[in-house]
Image (cartoon, rainbow, N blue to C red; front, side, top):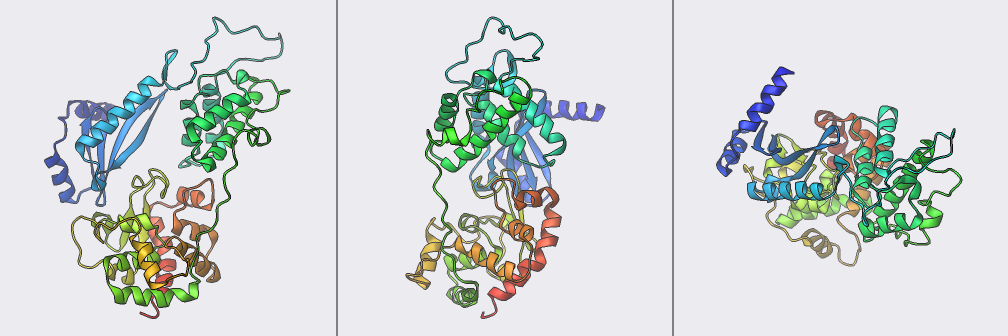
Length: 415
């Protein structure tokens, strides 16, 4: 305990960072954490450098990623992001619980005193935010794994208009406004949050903070009449696995940056954006360590993804450099344009090669968990989330290397 206190004192006295300090630390190649003060730090690990802001949430401490130093978030921008984040939290606080982050619009009416409840019923009033905390405390004990993202997903509900409302007063109109104002432009996310709101309100009923003879206002049968359903996703066109080797041979022969980036995405089962933004600082030995803070829509937030590289994938990189984009600054459409030029009118997409890999891996006998781990999917408690809870970086590399090597051998058989 004494050591922890001393460390905090040293951090408090630490001078603000300077750009030269950051460059020197990264150039040293050592894993370390640089502290700028006011809870902002730069975590340097295996060539990646991620800005982290640590803040208090009730009785707990949490942290959030503010972006990668290698992808445009410099010292000044990191400080600005930290200040903006802290400012939003301050504006959203509840006066009666100063450390909680809750915002309700319109502001909830604070009763002078809680209304009387029928004697002997055990009924009690709880704010929606308090019900969320109760639910998280219960499920974190046995239902959710240590590294599960579900607690964070539920905490997001505390920062919306529902957070400060009494659980027993929430109506379907409140749920509708919550979903419309926060996730109205992302209907798939709106449905996920609706389901979580329904769970929270069911928990409120179990805690006797809401009557059980009134329909749950977040029920899908009610909300579907108020908010359009999310469009059914359509799989992106994929190339049949048997045609991949011929295309790979053409890409290698082409040798242009976009061709090499496309081939690299295929061999690593990566996404378009990940391949285009691949940085030399992320290549560690024969592995590609994709930082979790790079693209929230692509990776699980805050969770890095380790990809073992075959000899064929390494050959696509060219001569190693200390830093910088491996394939140069490619426009968003570069890889799909290259694919369209080589396979005109085919309709296949870059993202579709992840499906080509899945088809090959399934036929080769690899488990769903292995396939999902290789693709680093981000949504829900799927096999991927369970996989991430059991595999750290070393485990990912060890587990995936044989499968991705076999995929590389198959895809480059015509090269």
